[in-house]
Structure formats: C-alpha cells, structure tokens
Image (tube, protein in one colour):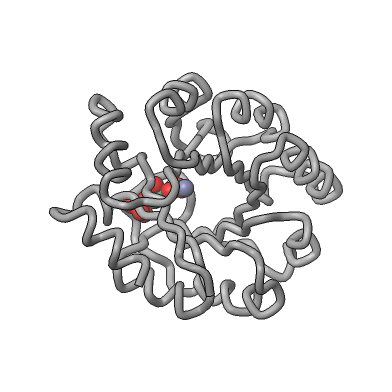
Length: 214
Ligand code: DX5
Ligand code: ZN
C-alpha cells in the first residue's frame, strides 16, 4: 500500500504560537495539516473557523486537511474551500441520508478532496453505499470534540472490511493515535493517521511522525 499520510492535528498546538507550531510539524516531515473545526452544536466544543483557516493558508506549505465537526456542513463548503481547504471532511451524522451523495458531489465540484467521517457509535455498514463517491473515510476512534482522549479499540474494527472492499480509498483514523494504536490501524488497512497530542507532546516530533508512518 501507498505511504501512510500523517496529518498532525493543530488542535494540540499552542494557538498563541500557531505559525511556529505549524512550521514544527512541516519541518518534521508531516504530509497534511489537520484542522479541527467545531461549532459547539455537533460537538460540545468550539475551535477553529474560517478566518483562522484562511490565515493558516497564508503561512502553511502543506495541504490543509479540514475536519468539519459541525451541523449544516453544506453551508460551509464554499467558505472553507475559499479559505484554502485541500481536503474537506464532513460528518455522516450531520447530514440527512438522502443529501449525502449530493454534498459529496458539491465538495468535489470545487476540486478539493472529499472526506466523510463517522463517530464511534456509527455502524460502518451504513456508510458503505457512499464510499464510491468519496476520496476518504475518516474513522473516529474517540468521540469527536476534544484532543487527548483514549483510543477506542472497537472502532478500529471498522477499518478492515472497508479496506477489503475499497482498495483505493484513503482510510484516515483520528483520536488517540500514537505509535502503538497507529500500527494497529495501519495493520488493519488505514493509510492516513491524525495525531494531536502524541505529536505535539513528543520531545522529538520528527521521530513521532516517522513512528506513525511505520
Ligand atoms: C477530536 C479531533 C481530533 C483531535 C485528536 O475531535 O477530531 O483531530 O485533535 O487529538 P488526539 O490525537 O490528541 O486524540
Ligand atoms: Zn479531527
């Protein structure tokens, strides 16, 4: 399989020194920058929005991997694309089933990569019909909302059946990822790993990123 895409979550960065902390992961060999957008409704936390994403775009070299944990994601596709998103991921649970295909097509029409994410309690069987319309499935291994939570191992079992059915799909995993849980996910077929606290709390960021690539 292709090389694993490592996407550090800047949620664990020091927001007063965001440029410094973005450069740290860029210089350490990260592939994408994971930006966690939360609205205080879909998840019980508020984080980064459109203006901060646009400012990040001014200084970042890496593709912006934007994870929308918001209600009504359709209303924010164009603003985040204009702000510089290169990969735009919405949550399956935030969209009515009969609107998912058109939302995926709408995101694609802007020429960005399209991802869909599932929360821990969502059954992976429910999303199989949509995966041909997507570039990426993001499997959450914590309840979305906060960094630094414990990896929920049961969620990782969703990876293998999807990999067997969709060899080309990017399968990204987010939540509680470290060297050990990252390996477990890679062995099941994941090829993109998000990590916030593991990377930013590490003494050697480059080593941490290499350890995720395996
Ligand atoms: C959680 C976010 C994650 C978070 C991961 O809702 O989607 O991207 O930053 O943080 P860690 O790697 O610390 O679990
Ligand atoms: Zn995330």
